[in-house]
Image (cartoon, rainbow, N blue to C red):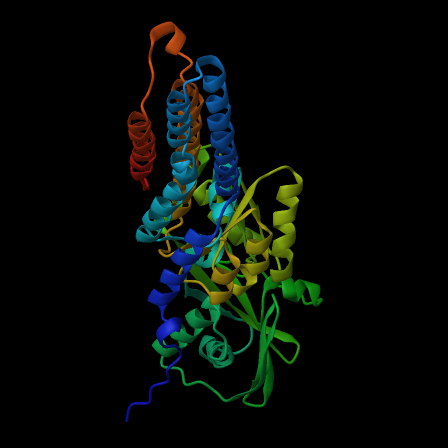
Length: 427
């Protein structure tokens, strides 16, 4: 018999969410686009005003009604704000489509364009810089056997969805250890888990939780290579389990690439300081916040912002959500939790931290295209309006017909569109 639970259909599917995000990003107007809209609005008033003024001046100086009307029409046709009005929306459409195809889902366009300002990137460790797949690297039993210690830990961790918990459970299954019944299970926020296992109160706690609880924490062999989880039974430390998490192969290159661009890279983790500093040293990070409780992550981002840094936060977990919201640009890893994705400004579909560098480059390129199009559209009108009004006629006898004005107006729009189409995501 196969029992299936349907958790989402139709609108809840992953593909539909991607489509919704893309559509939402295309509808959302950034500050740059709103500026272009205002410029186009003012250009409309300028076109009407310039056309009216041209008509009046030609009537005053020539008295020729047909010539005055022709000059007025030429000015209004050549000044039609197509290019200026489309300068930013065309880039938005192209960039949103390209980013989605390359695994960068934009939820907040202003934050995306502000990626060019990023001076510091803060990475969560587990699941972002590392694979988030913990394996047991060692078991130290202070009381009883390793198997008994691992059985107690795995029985309790079967109720948790933390990556550390999965590593302990998988190790117990490899050793063929049968789980014991668990009652009164609950999570101690930022500290570990606790429950009654086979009639005994057992807790799995971090080193920091033990120290704050007044326990004597013994030194454990291998503590420098991984995350430590201590098994506490009825208030006494029974032993410790060392878990190691592998660094993603892309993390080193991502950090180097960002640093070459002058961007500082920090790591934010709840792991013990020894492990955090070992990972930071291997990756060549500029700094590390270690042993940080979930509710403290947001404060660390604020600390960097208070120093004048424009901060991007990259994370994947529920605990990262406040920090993602606090950061100037919040970046969620696609394989992470829905809460992280909902809080972030940009979602990386792939798990590679290297995409952060690609995102920043693409944000800079997108902004450059917008500025180029705005400059072209503005410069075109600065030159085209006087020509259409006939300012060169007394000197050269040059007059543009309405048909030529229409052709130039169309050409300016084509140039804006072609320039937008050259936008590329460089990986």
